[in-house]
Image (cartoon, rainbow, N blue to C red; front, side, top):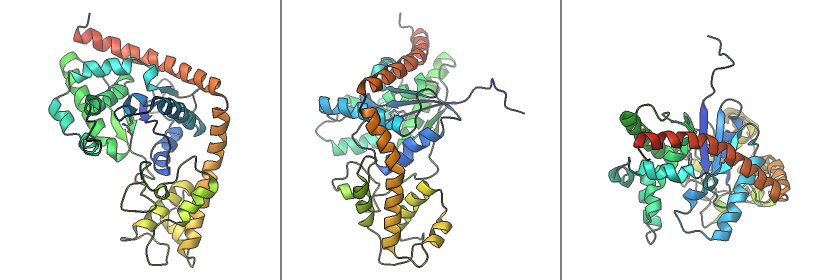
Length: 334
Ligand code: TRP
């Protein structure tokens, strides 16, 4: 059957925390994919600043990071004319639905979340209720917009599964209130590893900044980080077991150029690791250059950014309110 023009596009929702810098891992795993799927779906993207306070934040830094993250999304090609882009705290329904849904989520379920267990080990002196309830806030983000698809990395899969459990339970009690969401995993760059220790995931909280390359790093910094990437004692650029460093660089190169591993091996046949690392660094730096320029332009006009954020919040609020009203009616909140 021909798809008709009136056929509804699926709704996509995703969020990113405003934690300062965006690494290649965040870029390939999230933002790049987001900008590519805008045509195909009705997309809602948000800066998850409510999630950010589950660990202690400096207020001025949080404010700054939130606006910067918003600008990064736009600079990466998220189009506020086509998609809804907003800041989570601007839409009160997220916090409101979180309360309601927390009454439909079991203590045992939240206790089993691996991210909660990891984070409570890492921040042992601040295991707050927000950290525990974090997945309910994420479920609210998703369910408010009736999202059918949620682009996330593997690490968030368990949270989306919990969202389905909560939605299923609520629908079971009250009828069809929520759409059942599914994960949408990025094709390329699902797991970008540290440049210094390819056994570890690339992370912006790595105490060694040489482990990650960030979107807003200077060109020569990016190239230098790639030049000093840890590899192995072989010389041939090929994808193989036991060559985690080279495999990771090939994955990054492939994600930026669209080339297959065979094509990359052919391109660098007879070249050493030095040439290859330089080429990956230059490719990444070239890809980030126009994004950085657009980011700088946007950050130069904060009033314009704030206006876009307000417009995004207004659109998001309209949709979120509709779902929240329905939930309140079903539950019996007068
Ligand atoms: N928890 C996600 C992360 O840290 C960010 C996030 C918040 C999110 N709300 C969301 C992702 C809703 C997808 C859908 O990566």
